[in-house]
Length: 290
Image (cartoon, rainbow, N blue to C red):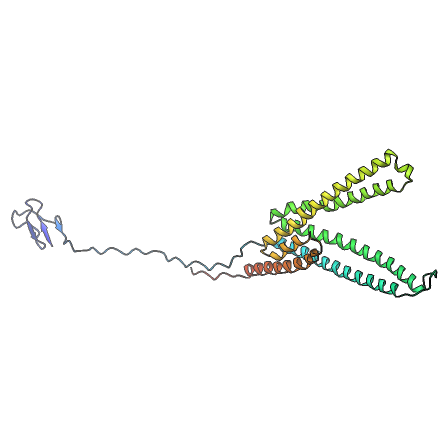
């Protein structure tokens, strides 16, 4: 390391204060540092950044209490469907039993029906009335549960709103069908002369048109409401059993599997939702160091 004179440019020893050639004061000017010399830079202290906290496992979708309540309503709908299946099987069993009793009841020709036959006939009427009333009650409750389930899930999934509204076309169509059947029966319960009356003919035509309209409404309610709604419920919770059950509901004979598949699929979806909500709720993040 040397000192260069600012006057004459002569390189002097680093211990010299005056130029040995011209006598000029060197001071601290002209200090030349070797090329391989490195100044010690002060080390800057950076704040310590804490590691990111572990995040809880996030479910694929955010589920709420509306999902739980909606799935429970749909499960009740499927359970009522299972009750209806059992009721139908019991009714078929007793019908077959009555037929067996009547066939094996021997009586002479032109002899009044014995007491056992009369009892069977009365039992058939009573059973038919009871089964009919229970069937209507079960159908109404099942419809209400399914509609409520769609509306609850529609609070968090707007795709269920349309099926829920279309589902209302089913009872409307059934009421119109009952009214149309009443018109036709009223027009037919007349004498042949009165039946030819243009007024009665108009009742028959009007009843037939209303019956056709009611069938269209019921069909739209079944397909656009029930089937589409169950399909979207199955898609939301990734449960294909619900979707398959919805499709089978419109196929004769196979529709007996609908409540079974829907019940199994909804039960699995409900367990999945409750487990996901429990995992997120019970998560406690680790404490961060200050």
